[in-house]
Length: 342
Image 1: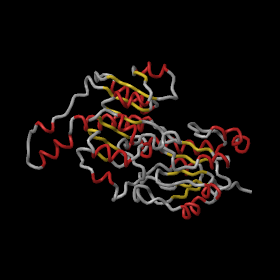
Image 2 (image 1 turned 180 degrees about the vertical axis):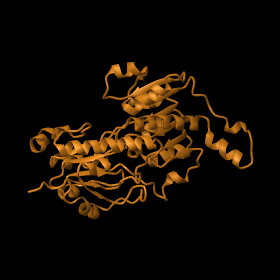
Image 3 (image 1 turned 90 degrees about the horizontal axis):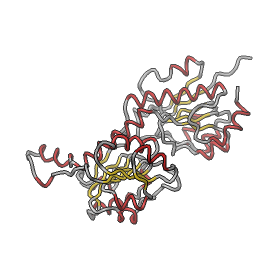
Image 4 (image 1 turned 90 degrees about the vertical axis):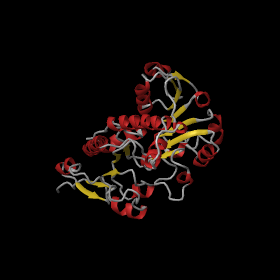
């Protein structure tokens, strides 16, 4: 009897051609949901996702869809759920682990560099008040001292989370003549020394910094860990930048801190609920106080292509019975290998 073709479901593939070639060359049956490029704000509903993923051996999930226990249950032979980007908040990793399924992400270097570069761009935009200057000249005005920016040289910049992205931000700020602080309880002192940053706990960092930028994953510990008290402890007029995960900051508290002018300004690329609701209070704040971008500030054609290749390579490895790189639930590897190893 001929072996069944391995079924790979891409819940929301890119429209860019060619990403699927390696899967087809390997003889996989490829099933695609609606492209994320065509409908970035319209995730496939759970009921439809269950139908789409029924009988799948592997799922290539977009940033748009949520993979719930019901989706896992629709695919009893599922080996792997792979993501072509870093964040996996929409994948129920506990359910995957209970069912012996690997969850893999794709930390493409281009993505890490892109977010780090974009973070510095946002910091500069806030400090130099670029939005106000641009608006003034478009409205027919010219120079005005009221829109003068501030130097970053001599200031203190706090980096919350010193992992891959936070570390890349620190490296890029190393020549700016600013004092760099970082808070990360999961890393030892050698990481701070390597990057030339001073270690602080979160409370001290917030109190001492003129700019605070966040680079942490969304976990039970980080969800809403920046609220009224933390924002109130920051220096008056300080800047806040978040390019990591939206739910780490209480948006109501942030709105209050900006409206009261306790914070000088903020820039957000990520939000508690995405896409950002048309009725969100964040939209009501003036652009010179709050700069908003649609969770894509670090995206590039390079990161998209590399991430997809990494995810496809992980899927093909799993279908061959080999444990791929970047497994996020390593506790399942032993049981998985016992069932699927070549």
